[in-house]
Amino acid sequence: MFEGQPQDQIDALMKRDPEFKQLYQRHRLLDKKVMDAELGVLPIDTNTLGQMKREKLVAKQRLLRIYDRDH
Image: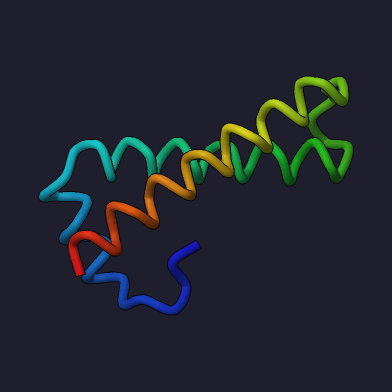
C-alpha cells in the first residue's frame, strides 16, 4: 500500500503511532485474506468478501490520513 514511500518512514510511524501500526497490520491481514478468497484458497461467501473489502478500504483511508498528517 505504501510502495512509493521509504519503508523506514513507515516503520518509524508504526513505532510512534499505535493506531497506525494496528491499522497497518489489519490492512495487511485483510489484503491477504481477500487475495486468498479471490484465488479460491479461502472459501468464503460473497457477502463476507464484500465486507472484508470495505473494511480494508476504510483501514487504507485512515492509514493515508494518518500518514499525510505526519508528513
